Amino acid sequence: MFDFKMLFTPFYIKDLELKNRIVMPPMTSNLAGPDGNVTDNMIDYYAARARGGAGFIVVEAACVEPAGKLMASSPGIWDKNMVGGWKKLADACHKGGSKVALQIGHAGRQAVSMFTSETPRGVSPVADPLLQEMPVELTLSDLKELLSKYGDAVTRAVEAGFDAVELHMAHGYLLSQFLSPHTNKRTDEYGGSLMGRLKFPLEVLAKTRSIVGDKFPVQVRLNLEEAVPNGRKLGETMLLAPILQDAGVDCFHFTTSVFSDLVYGPKLVQWMSNIANMGTPQANYTMMVKEMKKVLTVPVIGANRINDPVIAEMVLREGRCDLVSMGRALIADPEL
Image (cartoon, rainbow, N blue to C red; front, side):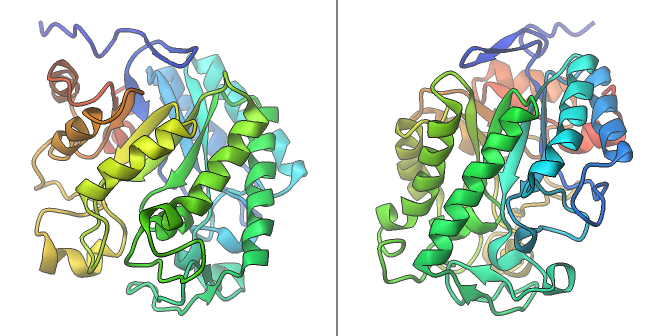
């Protein structure tokens, strides 16, 4: 019998104790109601993964406003009346034995007007090559309003009983758009240099920390690279992640790339895609995560093509990451 020396050992993120190192990553389930509310089917879906044994569940992105919905059935947390549904979901995960975080996000230019009935708003007027809708550039007034909405969303997540929050800065969504020179063409204080591109994500992080205090875990979902023209590369990610850490991030949940890679990726980097196909070598991206560990002191979660407990144990033993996200594996089998 294989000896799992690390995978099933407890782990701490700040003071939050996880019973093992298996993480269910945030993946859009399309089980929320058309109004963005949590449904019974959505609660049952996450509760099954909690009962199955995942130590830490990161629930799919809850949008801070209706215009920021990722998909037609994306859940929202833009209204205080939504807290009750989220509390039922968090309670169900706790009853199943898992700790649970809520990812908080906004689609930015990757919102679809067919779903939101609004023209997408983005960091700059740069259309997504997949969706092909030209976004309206967010004004300084818009950013001030959005910052307040992020704060309200975090407050509601805490009220609902979540153990942590995860700020979505990956996959080409709004905060990811700020970080990328591919999508951020602003000439004001929110663009240009690395610190300019970090400004709004840092403001969201500071707002979050001011609400939750010092002890509540705040983590960030961050893509390592982008296979798009003038996209962010690993070297720059190694520069910006320590800045986020110093600003209050307690854990990084690393992933790879952005959805635009599905257009550009085959031309730039053959193996690189946000949605790795089954031909991609297992745990391939965790070597980049190991590079990130060299510049960070907080825990890191590795993801993408870790679909077998033996592979998960291997990457932990080799020091590539501290916890492992097992997405497709937990969709296929809640009990892994």
